[in-house]
Every structure is written in C-alpha cells, then in structure tokens.
Length: 327
Image 1 (cartoon, rainbow, N blue to C red):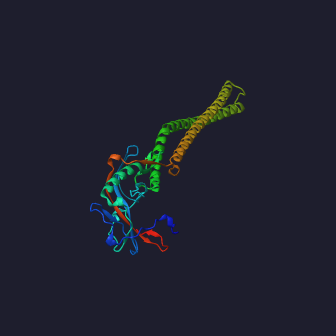
Image 2 (image 1 turned 90 degrees about the vertical axis):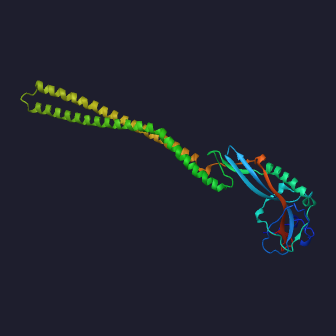
Image 3 (image 1 turned 180 degrees about the horizontal axis):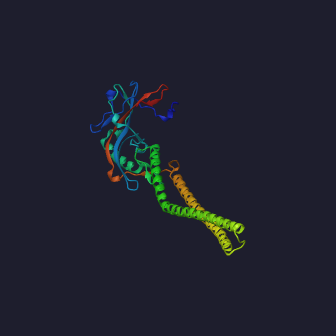
C-alpha cells in the first residue's frame, strides 16, 4: 500500500524512557496493546479505552439482545476523549509493555482520575446518541435480520422463508379452486355418460330404421300384393324411424356441445389458477425482494459502562520515516 502522507500522522513528541514513564495515580488503570512483529523502536501513544454493555429492545422487530463493546478514542486538542472518533478495539488482547519502549507526551487530563469518571459519563451519552444497532428489514415477508447476521445469510434465510410462504399460499389457492374444478369434473362425467348414451341410441335408431326400410322394400318387391295395408304400415314406421334418427342426431350434437362447454370452462379455470400461482411465485422471488436498513437505539436506562482506562498503543517508525501503528 502507498505510504500515508506525513500530515496524516502528527509528529511523535520527544519520547520518555521507560524508566521515566508518565507517573499516574494508582486508581488509573492502564492497558497495553500487543506489538505485532519487531518490538524494537516502539513508542507508545495514549488513547482512552472504554467498555460498555448495551441493551437493544424493539417490539416491532422482536429484538431483545445485549452487546458488549470496547472502544478506543483519541485525545482532542483540549485533552478530552473524543468518543465521536472512537473505533472498536480488542481489549482482551492487552499485554505487558515492551521493555525499552518510549512514550509520547500524555495530556494533563489523562493524569487525573477525575477525568476518567467524566469520560465515563460522556461515553454513556455518546453511546446512546450514536451507537445504533443496524438491522435489515424485508417488508414483503415481514422479516428482520438478526444481530450479527450478514446480508448474504439474511437473503438465504429469506429465500427459504419465501419458498415456504409461496408453497403455503399456493396450497391455499389450490384449495380455493378445488371445489370448482371438482364440480366441473362431475359435470363432465355426466356429460360424457349422456353423450355415450345419445350416441348409442342414435346408432340403434339408425339400425332399426335400416331394418324397417329394408323389410318394407323387400315386402313390396316380393310380396303377393304390390301394395297392402301391411306394407303401408311398415313404410309409415320406417318414415317415423327416419325422423327419430334426425332427433337422435340432434341430441348427440347437443351432448357434444355440452361436453365441449364444460371442457372450455375447466380449461379457463385451470388457466386462472396457473396465472395466480405464477403471480405468487414472482411476488415471492427472494432475489427481487427489497431490503431496508433500520436502526435501533440502545435502551438508555440499561447502558452499563465498564472500565474507562488509559490505553497505550504501540507505534514504530516505518521504512519511509513515518510512524506506523504496530498493533
């Protein structure tokens, strides 16, 4: 990485030998961050260490959680702790100072125990004002991320929830359409049976008419009398049978139209169901869900400040002559 500009790092004050480290009252706790790499040429710079426990409670998201954090703040020109410029620090990594290290100048306020009590109060006020718990919200599914959950993990959970909600709603939708489709199936069964019956009657009528006409013709051709009362009666019956053929054919056509109508209504109902299922699947596409960030403030009455101490951070001179942090 490019070397930082000299202006980014104030010149290190004249170091004080370890044997002459800044004297402090016994009730001011000091901690030292460990040195990474070569421990030679280390100069310690002072910061303020503050630890706290925060309680986040929010009914709308169902959040009720505690968080512990440690912050490291620089000193301002007036010697006060600048909590607004604090950054997270691993206070558990405290170690012993490096022998032979030097120390930068320590602000006068950092030498007084009363300052740490004041900084404790300002830390509590600053945490309440600025230390928000940020969560992700998915309004479409009415779900919220959990504290510490990454966006990727949250989206994976949304995908599962979206699939479960979609399946449940599709099942409910199918239940809604089921009675209508069942009714149409029953109607189709009856229409099919009627059509088969009409076709059978039509076929039988055609056969009866053919036999009747054939008998009449044969009787007229080979009977003893060309025209008799019997032959006239048979001809009349044949004519009536022929008329019935027309009516039976009409009944068959009507039954076919009825069946086609039922099939058309069933197809339309199934199309409507398919369209609504597709709409549900589109609405529950986890990849298209919008996420919003929400912020939750800590409960003021529950802010518990732990220790506020002096924190020594190790620095060394880099190859380019500029100081670099050695933690």
